Length: 237
Ligand SMILES: Cc1cc2nc3c(=O)[nH]c(=O)nc-3n(C[C@H](O)[C@H](O)[C@H](O)COP(=O)(O)O)c2cc1C
Image (tube, rainbow, N blue to C red):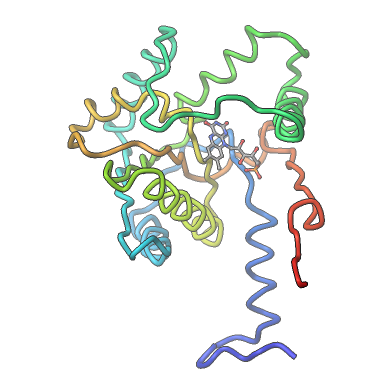
């Protein structure tokens, strides 16, 4: 029998079904409506995500949210750098290579995106054009930049990753759409300069968010997940 959580307001069955619903519904939104999200709703997301666990409770995430004119100035600056073909300027080393099953999963999700958009396999120009949409924030009216403290190293980034997940789930619960974006972190130096971030801040990723354009075809497919059996090893003896 499941253990009852002290002072819980809902049954375990209700609690897990809401969590499952949120996890199953959430997807990376790549077309947003221009409608802005009111400040109270954004603050509700932030307050919820603030409960994220972190190593030694260091809570290394700092979140910069650009909206309105500030979002437009940032969009122009980062789009221009990305479109110029500028080199990789990640604060954290990006994946060196996708091999084996990781390459297969990457390909599957990539082809889902391109097929949905009617982009032919191998059409590198069209791939690049779609990738640049990252720097228009896919039309989202708000973009968050998540950054961590340099001396905390990779574990600071892990804590920020957990924060990103909780941000996305809280946003989902309040009817918002989100997309986490490592693409923005490719321009970490520009972000630090543009927003005058202190030298000891390291950019982990962005999250564009707002209301999903449910009529846009790019939002119509869902990615798969490996089974638990493919992922977990139970060791008992
Ligand atoms: C840390 C992180 C960074 C990501 N960066 C990007 C990105 O730069 N651009 C993009 O289109 N999607 C990005 N994604 C979205 C992933 O492609 C997506 O989560 C994955 O394909 C699973 O699909 P789903 O989010 O729709 O379930 C990122 C996801 C994560 C977790």
